[in-house]
Length: 232
Image 1 (cartoon, helix red, strand yellow):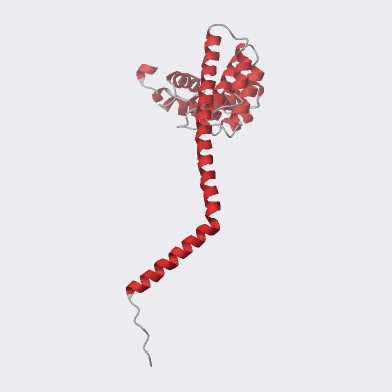
Image 2: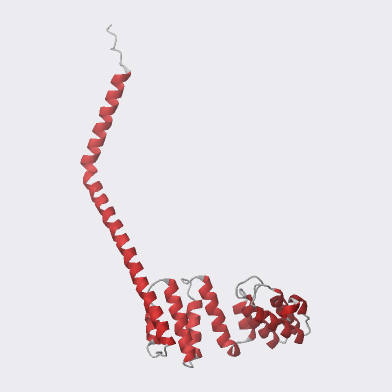
């Protein structure tokens, strides 16, 4: 009986390489056009994205310049066009530019004697989850400050509860308004303790801490130890 010829490693490698080559050629015959189209589409999309980003940067730079010009106009007494300018800038552009324009629009409204409109703008900022939290917190503080006399004490307390805590950036102002709301509820001891907490928080502005010591004292809570002697 004839013996099968010996199959060398070299022969096996050659067959394997030929098989792979045939598979690759067959693949490109079938899908080469699609691959070429995909590569072209990727390059076009990448180029378009880069152009779009550059365009956005240029547009944002232009808006920042408009914002700066609006501030310059206000400083020189040209306030008439400011509301419209800030209104336009608050609708497009980066979140920082939009929020800054809205804060400026609210400030102009206050300057023109319209606290209701200012409070409404602050409310819009504080309720917009698209803005960074620091902008929203600052707007909530300003809104509550403007509406304080019209709000029920419990509403003030509930609204400022996340900010009226030691260590929070707005603890001084939020805590102060919360304590005043507690006084309206006749919770004087609780208000005094909150004023004491404000007085001893070194991150709170010195003026607010000094005021907190005085008010706490009037409520029967001695907070003088919370401040260094030279600050009293």
